[in-house]
Length: 330
Image (cartoon, rainbow, N blue to C red; front, side, top):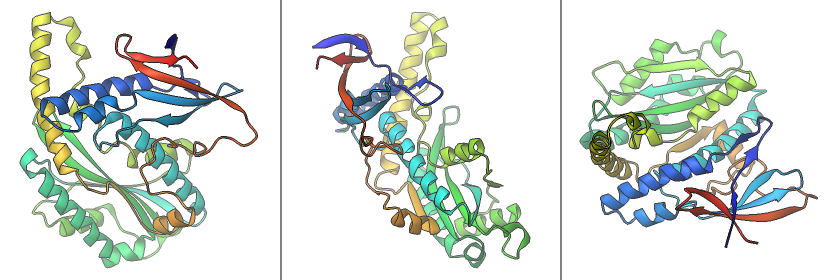
């Protein structure tokens, strides 16, 4: 059944391997947490990405052809694929309008909240963002936006930090015309919409034109809604301690992980984590960019086999004993 060949998916000019194994291992830890809290999602997450089918072209390039992704909101494997898909889509939109607009990178935050307050705080933030988009200053300055939601977890304080990352499309002469908004004004606008008695931290900066800078900022806006490390602690540093201490650390982290998974799973349910407005929404429609959750064709050029290029199909399956993907017999 297995050939013994380990999956090596090498892509791009850097020849860096795609980290399928690492994402699968973290996903299995999430499945364990779902099982401990008796969630029906445990089995779906356990099976996520257990089977991978690739197209291998004559130049040795590989592209994912099929898989069994679970589509669970917190799943590290699905979050990774979703971030790659969103990066490709947002990049296409920005490339299409870059000649006409300048881009700004806006981060909107609030104070950290407890698990009990997370869901209501997220509701408040979404309402506040809608209110911000209706403000006259915002409408005069911004021609379009792409907004994503993220929340992080602080293991030391057991608090959550929900926030928005937003790319704004503004006029090329934005910094010299009357619609310009200073950082302090952005903070005051957000405070007013969020209706807080404190001035929230708001960061606004130019999205750089260089390909490296642009890629970094776009990746920031479409990255995971929840980092796997925010949910599951990195236990690699405990290997230097005795087995007894390691066992106690794992028990302690499992308790926090289970509580965090339950809180985030509930708070993020049925929420649109990435949204478009103005020219971003228009171009998204004009380019016919799908709004579905297709995680197979996650990057540009993955949506169909390359024309006039032949390829072979290779199938891999996760092996529990080897803790890696092994190739199946054809």
